[in-house]
Image (tube, rainbow, N blue to C red; front, top):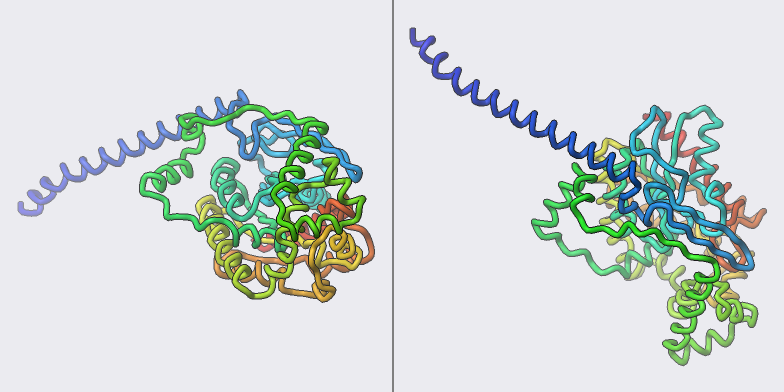
Length: 402
């Protein structure tokens, strides 16, 4: 009798719990249907904000060394159109800066596309999204990962950290403040409901169309403005550059970013590797950004890998000679330094992120063949081919291990 009474008292509680669970399940089902519908509207009508640029933007770029047109796809990055819905193929996100984007080369010759072709030819069913963004650094990589990973649901994220440059950017980035509680809640919602959050947020989906002449004029103006702000010492260094280099800057044929770095931070390729204060700040800041990417990857049950992109100052005497003419401060011993990789490895260890290097073999190839544009300094088509091949070997091993 007593057992029956207890069972009778427990049954209403159990029914209540079941009712709550059923209601929660129905509620979650409805929200996921809303999320699917929001995604369909955003991406079927191309009204999404774009992960990097507005969908179907176009930028033309021409210098004396190269000429290419960058076409942005349906999701706002430089690649062929990508469906949000997964196929049976493995999906990889390649995150990086202009060296990943393919500055100076056609999209299909960028290293993510080289890697994709070679892995497919080797029998691996795979698709690689090129999420390279010119001017980006570790902070921007993490912000992009936060948006891209929940949307594209990759199996693996490859972060191509540019030697020296990315740690320099990280060291100079303002310290990120703890996000207020409201922002943390919004981030959580963006992680689970990226499409609905995008529809509810004010975004700029405007397409960008920049011709080569317009871009050249932008560069001319940037050079002119910087020249007007130079110190006397910087102006003296600029006047000591070869006349062909100065003329190229004035004509808008050389990236103003090179001029800024050479005149104002000419020793950054040494300072980011020497164990000093700037190097340590770069390591610590980059580690925080890489840890954020790891968290986003873990939520999506995706793998993560950091592969440093070799900077030309550490590759060959030929490349060093060109950089010296641009006004950078270098040491011949840099050609055998392990520090450019080691500082990135330190950041990866602190962030608990897997690391792999291709610098040794890349250097060997770079001593035998030009892998960079002589003045511009980005990877040329051959350089993208070598990096894509070497990084692809690591990615193949990564999938074989999984």
